[in-house]
Image (cartoon, rainbow, N blue to C red):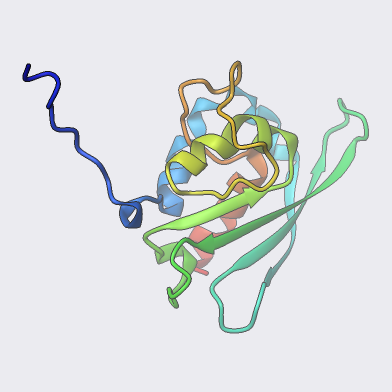
Length: 153
């Protein structure tokens, strides 16, 4: 009888989210970061004046793939639209990338933690890739986070 009325702890939607440092710590799960040395941040610019949102353009140069040069676009923005500080100190951020690995591995897991919006994927949990639901950035977002944290943007 007690099992029927067991209390479950629920987190309020307002407390969901991850910091950039928490996302950075979770990147160890992905074994494919060996080729992240080919990723370079090309351009960084704020989306709208006065808003703490950053957009990134990264270039991936990998001679083993076809095409060997690919450009990807990323966004890092606060989960709270009224936040006005620096993104490196923001308590809850959201990230997104347009690469395939982000769509199929990480987007849903980050969405469940409140660190992303479903933009590229279909909103269903993965059946084969990242089934444990570990939220982490793709290699492009990893380079962006490595750019934002030391520069305190």
